[in-house]
Amino acid sequence: MNTDLSNMDLKNEVFCVVGLGRSGCAAVRLLRRKGAQVRAYDARSREELSQVWSELEALGAEMHSGQLSAELFAGVSRVVLSPGVPPAEARRFATAVRAEVLGEVELASRFIQGQLVAITGTNGKSTVTRMLGDILERGAGPVFVGGNLGTPLSEAVDTDAAGPEGVLVVEVSSFQLEAVKEFHAHVAVLLNVTDDHLDRYQDFAAYAAAKGRVFAAQTAEDFALVPDGDAFVTSLAKTGDAEVLHFAGERSVVRMEGDALLSRDGALRLPLAELGVSGQHNAIDACAAASAALLLGAPVENIDAALRDFRGLPHRMQLICERAGVRFVDDSKATNVGAAAAALRGFGSGDARVVLIAGGRDKGGTYAPLVEPLMRVGRAIVCIGEAAPKLERDLAQTSLPIRRAATMAEAVRLGFRLADAGDTVLLSPACSSYDMFATYAHRGDAFAGAARGLRDAPRGTC
Image (cartoon, rainbow, N blue to C red; front, side, top):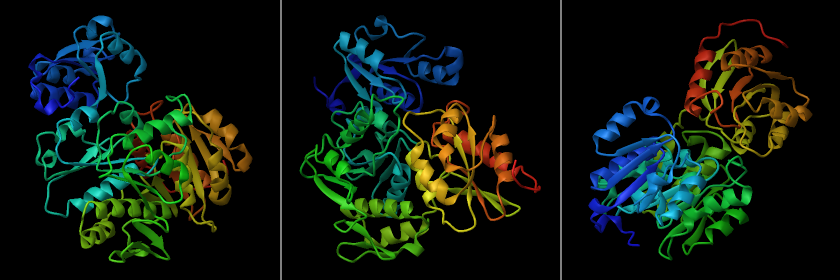
């Protein structure tokens, strides 16, 4: 099958787009712009899809909802799977009609001539994507920053960034990487791999293999960038043909040495104290972003200036407010245990301590990695959502007070009462948001609203 879609007349091609979230809708728009026939499907009803249904129907898409059926796939040459859609059933129908299955980032990449930079990992990928984007946007050429981070890659097609002189910095999730085949990143960055999404994958090995697909289509002219000293992640990088390089360690493109970030040639030397964000995890992310930028030829002065100015992303260790000496920090994007553990490790072990608000929809695995940092910096734990009973069991050995809350507002009130002056109430859920909230941002906004709505009140054990 000819897969260079940019050179094909798509008028007689029938695509089925399964899942009409943000990326699915972007894929429909792209395909209709290119003249393809599109069947657009979502399990939600016309009424639930509302404006999306009307918009895509007006573009000429053939709209479908309800149960998947063989009729939907009749005559289809390619099936575009949205990342949030469990793939098994759609793949079964696609296989029956010998249709190619691809994801939205794969689809978009087949129309792009610019250099692709792909950034993935269990934690930190959005931060590194934005850091690198900020660096490159200080240059003269056209730059796109998006993917899983925000704007779907399909929306970059036909922009200057997609042309031969452009650079596209794309955050890619494991769900998106499941359906890539020819997605070709000139620089592919894998930051880390820890337990996550085990509610979707058979085991950790399957999840890690999905992450490793970011390297699959690379050639000897490309770069695979991985953390120094992480043998497992390095082994995933070696599954492709790219030159494997490292960040943050002794053998790295950019390393941490003493109290500074330092490039191999010494041209970049940035004191850690002068980074725009604090914490070791942010310093490691800065090493990754700076390394990728150097591989792309970015001037050192642009890297230095962008990293000094970077102030982080919403819902990532974001200070919301202070009430009666208690700080409230929103880390709602910590949707897995590794991210929550990293957040806790960023706190010092002095008298000021942390009241952790955690919970949501469980993603498999254990919460045991939270025990050690909680025993070092924890004051108490407030559990929310479907995962609350499991959290209570796994964290009982901390011997910290553990309370359960039915709503975010109640969790914030409990956290405030359990805290002492100087403490931090930290929302770092270690879970997805979908039991109580539409997104992690919705969850973070609820936390921020409840914290700002608090009035100073006596605190103590409750």
